[in-house]
Length: 110
Image 1 (cartoon, one colour):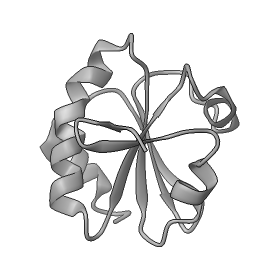
Image 2 (cartoon, one colour):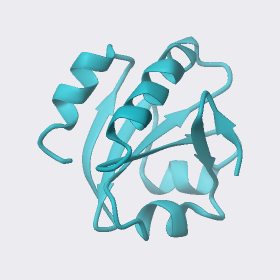
Image 3 (spheres, helix red, strand yellow):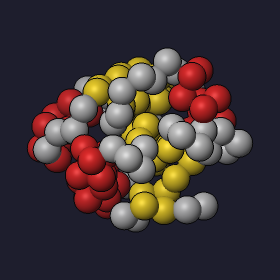
Image 4 (cartoon, one colour):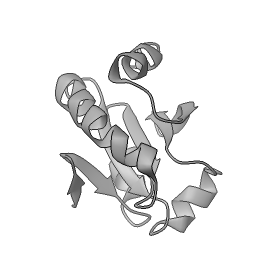
């Protein structure tokens, strides 16, 4: 599995196993190589993954290389963050944000 700034990248092929089938809640960043705010979020996601790794899994999905999952969840803007728990999306957030705000927004779903 490829990693970006220490955050694993999932694909259309392994999304069900890695995200839907996860025992932990999963934060998925829908990202793109051409998206500057997405690149700004890489170190933030790496820090969140490191700090919250026992309670939350963090992964990235490249929208250009994985259109099936992107379309299935109707993702139109990058970065879009979705939290999956028990195989279902339970929260969605759009746009870059500082780590503190991201952690605050995740508090009710982790």
